[in-house]
Length: 159
Image (cartoon, rainbow, N blue to C red; front, side, top):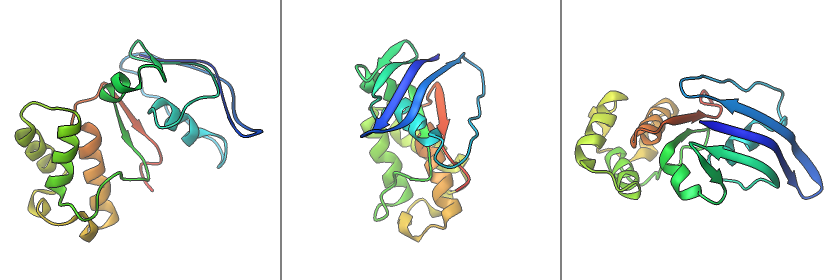
């Protein structure tokens, strides 16, 4: 499902990831731990197609990055400390925006179920900028799982 071989990421002359290898099979749950600056978020950004590696192999669901980033994005969901939500849009509008990006069938039903699942049905028509951090995090989970991804990446999900 996820295959990483000799992954390297440099920022200029500064090496952040040096020869990372990782193999994750379907159904496995993996936690990355390490001190600040160890490269955990950099690795997550590469796996989630937000950052290109300097060298090495990254394959998600059989698709190689960065060549097949568009396909991989449909296969993964990402929850991070950056919500990727639009503050002036309502919760419902935010999820409809992402449903359209993913070209989801039955978008209205899926958005309604997702909002209900994360406990935000009563606030679905409120602008996201009025939400508490916890409410935004729940909506972020709804956004990340709306397209029912096979891989869910959680980068600092409690911050």
